[in-house]
Length: 156
Picture 1 (tube, helix red, strand yellow):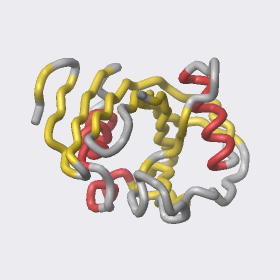
Picture 2 (cartoon, one colour):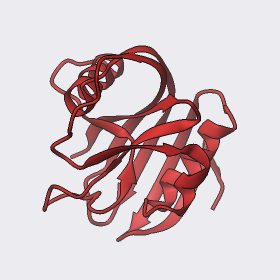
Picture 3 (cartoon, rainbow, N blue to C red):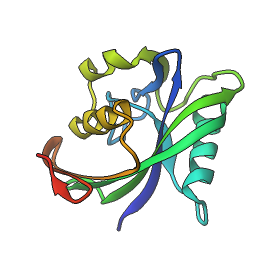
């Protein structure tokens, strides 16, 4: 059974707000750095989900955000996931502690050296290049990326 999720990279002064997933034991993202987001609740749109998850995980209310793409994750370990990818450049409120990990503003050019999924580096690069709305498929065997396709065309 597949799941629907959102992921958002909140940008401020050349940095993204990143979440170092170190607090939950049973976590497919354990010890990795990712954006913020989570699973859809029944009946939510992608926009409603990203707004709720941003508020829950960071305490911030997004005021300027953009739907950037959809990422299909296929794994031999985890259920198939359709992740709706967003960026945000406007927000209000005060950053709070997250119960899923440690939040930190990190320079965008320093992200590629952090522990993260190989596919995340692909879509971060697409965001950096300001690629218009895209569909990215990522296939993993364990933690190894074995296939990637951008808008239906194989890229690795």
